[in-house]
Image (cartoon, rainbow, N blue to C red; front, side, top):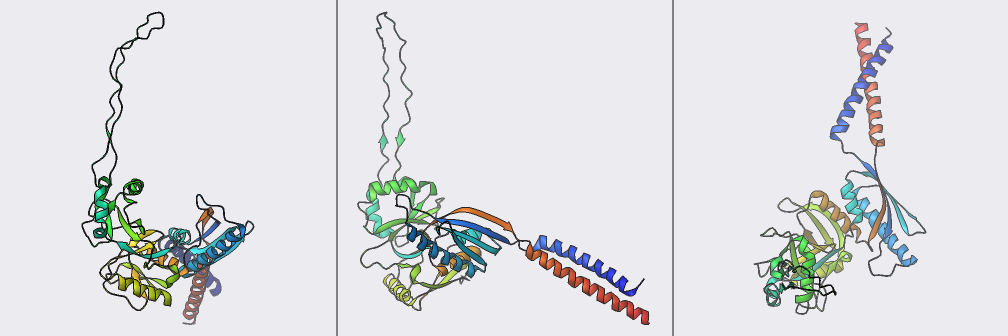
Length: 383
């Protein structure tokens, strides 16, 4: 058989083996990538007037810039178009390796705020009067009696039986739904179950709102609960004379990092204005906690040991690496100007990259197999 023909056959066999091995490795070890397509519209807040065309266009433009910046930071190629009379966004994002992270990346508002807090010691005089016994709610019962109704025919009805007495209902109190903190200078006021947040809000409006400081607002977040309660309750100084609040406009850069203990964290640097505010805020609250909020949820409440200079800060809140990276992407690109709805979503796996790689593997294996076998045959023939 001709030397070239034999070499070509061996090259085909080597290429086939290489293709088979590559396909097995691709299925078992490589990360699948996806192309995501979304259509977004601006969401009107309940009870508000629908935004006008110009306002909607302006918000969508800002949203487009924020989403493009987030995807760029995450390494995702993105194409954004407007549609529907410029009141919708059409977004295509490629090479996505984590669809959950991507959805969080574009859906989250990414609003960051750093607030001063009221400690338990400062609010105990307000909370104590509300710790009263449960209110007894009486339920009316029908008394037992003999009843005769004269219909002209002297028909006597059977003796009426009283309705079963309903159990006495106890109105929930603050003490029944919250485990109070035993740390007077801690950031947490206490802990409640997530299902009790609506009840807590009602009790606050009824019993506490009139006696609480006017600039206090309650927020929730994860905390080191000593019981089975899974949400920590914080009382934040939300506004007022002398209050210093840091938000997204004060953030210059943000990146995912690892803290001193090796846990995922987010490190960010402030603008010149943000640096001055950060120095003033930490200097004013030495020995006290500060609450760091993302999208109105307290994710960290560190205690300030001294005024912090240099315009840098770090937050950690039990993040995974992906969550810390997503948060860093959001903070780097700024907060969304408004909320929005995803009205269409299509996620499709990408096969082009794998097919291109497999073609290259086959060609390289074929060339190596053919060339090597030809040289061997020539060498054997010459000997």
